[in-house]
Image (cartoon, rainbow, N blue to C red; front, side, top):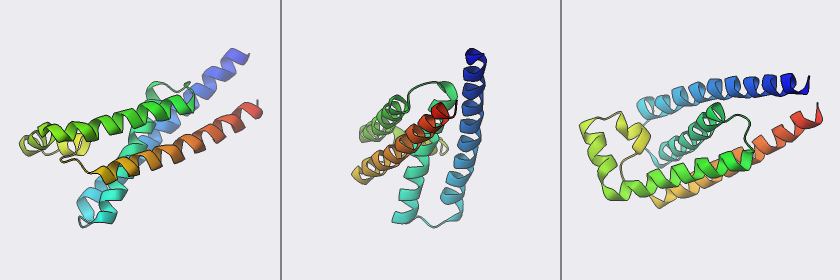
Amino acid sequence: MADVTERSRTRVRRIGSLVALLTVVVAGLAVHVLLPDTGATDIAGDALYAVAVYAFLIAIMPGRYPPLVGAVALAWCVGIEVFQLTGIPLAAGTAFPPAMLVLGTVFDPRDLVVYATAILVLTAADTALSRGRAKGT
């Protein structure tokens, strides 16, 4: 019975993360397309990107410990930001503009702070929710 309960929890977590991912992608596109390019929208876009990465990771590994998901999400975001120092993401985005939504364009150290903050908050919330679900069993 415990195995069935765990599989059910994992399935609910995966579906929830996919719904969150879709919602965050729509919100991110709305920020990108509908709002003026300002520091605030840049920060919002960065935070939404971090949330999208975290949600995607939960979708593909729903049973993993939240701090592991957070560490992988942060590594991805930092890796993409550092990759921008090569100029490849900018060239890719110039050739194929949708690539900018995944790879960004130019390095901005502020983005690293936004990613770390967003992922720290997500990981803390996910950990608290996971503990709450475990106690409810």
